[in-house]
Image (tube, rainbow, N blue to C red; front, side, top):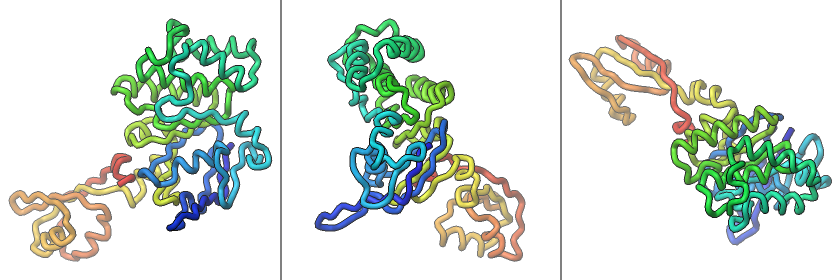
Length: 295
């Protein structure tokens, strides 16, 4: 389990600013969490704090109930990271050499890794490429190698920064399926930072939205999509001049056919209450895609 407790990170530059401000998150074992936010929203800073690469100004991070400040080995043992562009591997080395090197670097048992390596190469469909330099592989395969290296020490938590960046549609679908399999088959907690909304929607159980250093939303995708804030209704009413005026004033697009107005609106209950004499023909509730939650 990962707990982020009231984390803040303040930078005392010419214009003092918070990269993270009072962030609280609880991530359970086996969950897949998406980090979403614009550049500079604070996602990368929080990931660096979780990985113990930088220290927070306030707050603490707990892994399995232990404060990583007092127990830095908890991070090394329990957190694996895949950086954007698969930067945690050596591209000029083969897959075998990368695995051997990181086995040595992490002080892992070579005999134990030998068995784990075979299973991972088979799962990632890279057995036939084991002796090939990483830089000669496709972008998707390079990402797979980076994930294999991160999984060598069998961490509880796997953090992935833009894992589908640069992949074609088919490769993205395969990567999403593979990451889901890793989470379920190996009971891993995944934190995925991505700008690709469809990837987050198809992969993650929950989403954490970041804006200007603050955590603005954290919930399951279904709860976010189906909440009143993010649902809208397709409405057809009998035309009235005051309704037309309202729609224009609020920049709501509508179509007019015969004596009917057809439009989509967020808070339909509030809208209807504005017009006591309204004649409603149809109300049909619809749901936004995850992209609209981010906008």
